[in-house]
Amino acid sequence: MKKFIITTTIFLIYSFVFYVVLLYFWGQYASPRFKPNFVYKIGSGGHTYTRLSEVKIFGEVDILFLGSSHAYRGFDTRIFLNNGLKTFNLGSSSQTPIQTKVLLDRYLDRLKPKLVIYEVYPEIFNLDGVESSLDVISNDKNDIQSLKMAFKVNNMKVYNAFIYGFIHDLFGLNKSYYEPVIKGDDKYVSGGFVERKIDFYQPKKLEKREIIFKDYQLAAFSEIIKTLKKQKIPLILVYAPIPKSNYNNYTNNNYFDSIMNRYATYFNFNEIISLNDSLHFYDYHHLNQKGVEKFNKKLIEILRENNAIIFESLCKK
Image 1 (cartoon, rainbow, N blue to C red):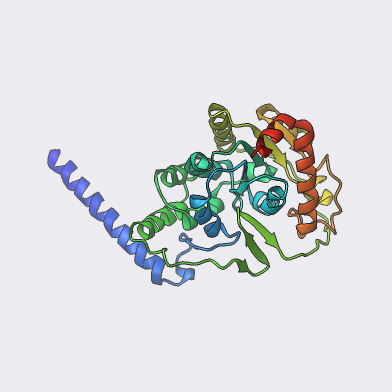
Image 2: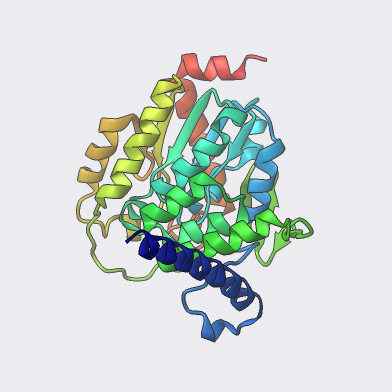
């Protein structure tokens, strides 16, 4: 029996090493059509690589923004800076609470925010987290937090990306990579914001749908709330504006609002600010720069009115 266990252990070790080596060369040289379960794209959309490189040297901030693409495309760090507030936007594409927790665990102590504003788009609570995990793994360091994230998402693409990314980190294979400030219609702005070339949405008919919460995403969301409460960092939840033609197709907006209100101070800007679907958005769920400016102006106004003590303390230099 002892010999069997030793033999089996040795076999498993050799098999794992062989798989890792094969995975690396497969990832490097195989055609994409032959690797459906392999996705590793450094410098993917949303300037995640640049954002997660900058955060490592950014220093303390007044406000930290968290969330999906509605965060990094919705909170313009320049507008807040013009109002005396140093901010950093830690949003990423399709970021679900699982990835938010990973990034918060990595960078909260470095940024030491006086206030956290967490953008909560309903759809992120019903995503499996695969897309965002691949984005974070490909564009940031890979550590124990990455491994925990991979286990929670439990997807072969994520496991493969983690192994491949870990090899790249171990041997410094990404050190020479440089992501351009301007990529296509996107321009990276210091502090994590991405400004998109002005474009306008042509509203289309969308299907009715229901807001659904995955249990494990809501559990990760609760852990984030606990982390911030433990460190006594004020939190504001924000549902950023989306076109009315999209917002009105959700059948249970009141339900979503009621859930968010249980966790922290919450503002649904779809009920607060009136924007034009064609003038203030570039697609069915993202603001264009004209919309961003109106949204941010209103948010700062609300911070002043409803969180006067917090806002005044943030502005003290």
